[in-house]
Amino acid sequence: MKLEMICTGEEILAGQIVDTNAAWLGNQLMEQGFEMQRRTTVGDRLADLLEVFQERSQHADIILVNGGLGPTADDLSAQAMADAMGVVLVQNKQWLTVLEQWFKSRGTKLSQSNLKQTMLPEGAIMVDNPVGTACGFRVKLNRAWLFFTPGVPSEFKQMVEQQFIPFVGQQSLEKQQVDVSKLLTLGMGESTMAQLLESLDWPAGITLGYRSFTPYLELKLIARNVSDANQQLALQQAEKLLQDAIVARNQPCLAAEVHRLLVDTGQTLALAESLTGGEISSQLVAFAGSSSYLQHCVVSYCNLAKTELLQVAEQTISDYSEVSMQCVAQMVAGTSSALGDVQQTDYAVATSGVAGPGGGSADNPVGTVVIGVKVGETVHCQKILIAGSRGRAYVRDLSVAVTLDMLRRAILGTPPVVDYSYINRLESRKFAIAEL
Image (cartoon, rainbow, N blue to C red; front, side, top):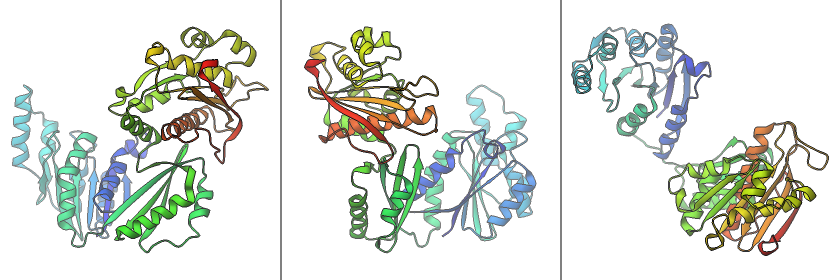
């Protein structure tokens, strides 16, 4: 069964908005054992919509069309579909009743523009929208069922979960079981990974997929109608080859894995961020339940904040600079005990560095980063150099990733400081908390 998606909207074509609906749909279908074969994006022009509906309906079995069902003049999906079918638009009495009740309950009048949303191609089957004013619909054209949904994400997602995926299941005579295992890696380039993996024999039905999103590289093991034993064999083979580069399994990001570990262990964390400016904290608090472990985050961007809020000695900054392992170690100790010695956190993390584009020196050029992680009564520090010309955002993103990975390793009881293939580690050192 061939599944496709047509995304409509000038704002998507122009890059004014990112089409998150399409990415979400692909993932939802995959989790249910269905794969999307093709995705087409088209603007809000009647002739273009008509052409793509007619063309794709000759190749696909089911097409989800997203967008163009609103009340404005540029919402043309229903009209284009009627033209493609050679029929007229007719008012759907069922949806008219729903809209009349919807507006009456809110004390407002049903406008002429909203009445436009009751007009569907003749013969279309209405699809309920439980949270908005634009109903969906489905029609058959050539070999395909075209299933129309509004573009508003909250409306689209409910309709997909409640109606589209069950419809796909009903239409599928032979559902191909698709399972995806995801290995998130850090510190390994795509060409290096491909060279390691693609020369080997994999069980029949296993396909390798890669997704690079700075600074991570995700390996997907896609299993189509593969036994559990062969899936496990493929996963073990991949893990053996990638080894220490793997930082999470079946997680959307490294912060999600650190969050899971801290919640599971019941341990606490404090942060002191200079270079990363609160980004580590932001990524962790994106997950519900982070309050169970995250005590506080001090964004100590200036040196005065380091000395006054974190008790870093002025002499330390004078002797070694703020971009030094000595300074970061004291930042770690200061944030861990910021609420008093009795409430010291199990783990503490600190970052400092030079993100650029200016501010570098001979001793600390742009891209120099220092990270410290407290484990027990020891602070593990490393100073790295993120070279190249990818810019300030890249230095900060990669610094956050390395910091989270150091913390992850500390929680697991393994050495926090490891080598990454494309990061130059300048030096590393351990400090005893008592000496700081």
